Length: 334
Image (cartoon, rainbow, N blue to C red; front, side, top):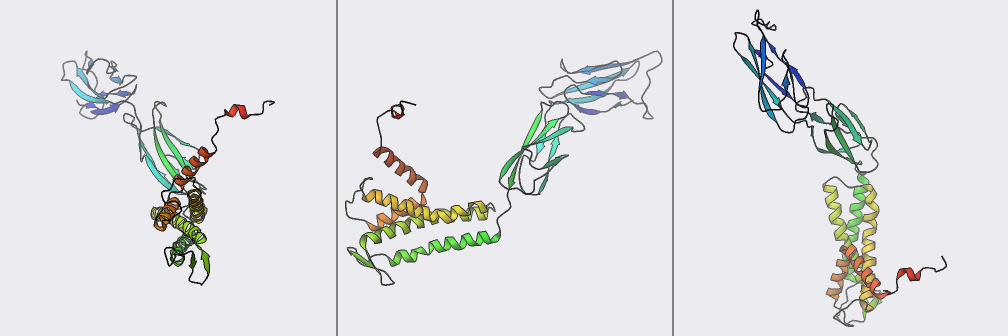
């Protein structure tokens, strides 16, 4: 007379009815004048079993364990089955996905010990829809957002598992990408202008351009500084553009950054140059200008505009530093 079920997995407070089966598969009746004795073989605190074979797991499981359930009919042979006890947890897969507007993702939640894997679903913030673990991204998706998908155990609402959904906006129209590419190439073409403005003699006081215009030495230096600053910004912007296009994460909202960044780099390089020439920053060359050093620092200022801005802020703070307490500058009548 086999004992059914032979193997069962349970968790916090769940129950399972065990039955001795006769040869025909029906529940076996106790022998005439006898009984069926039910026993558990395990460490203390591994649940209880009633006189009719109803096993109940402990209310809280902290570690996995196995329990042997044994039914012994009077005058008969004992029959055993195994109960696997597992701590209540929720396993949610996949744990992280990226979706664009309208795309879907099926999430699978597993609750060891719960035969039906009963879970409740929640999404926060409430972007998109979730039905039986099938998540659909909202339409339209106007900005990149992160949504947290939570699976909550139906047995114990304190047991949860989460997954992250990265919502991505639609890639920009191909014309935006091509336009930015052409613009960056145009910025790079300023190298030709840089070469045309380079002085023909190291000590020349005037420079003649390829269109036969004559500019003074100081004006020439200003042009060199601004162009090198723009080229430095181009190097930074072009590298960023290639990375984002290659990863398919380019956003049309960043178009203004790509358009203005070379101009920002040129302006910062000019301000930095004026600060150097004005003596606000220490230089070692006096009035003599090292063209290679000048163009190199201008390009670096354009490439690392954030660091250059921080340095200029330090100069400003040093020049206009005051020892007075800010409180003393306030209107005493207020």
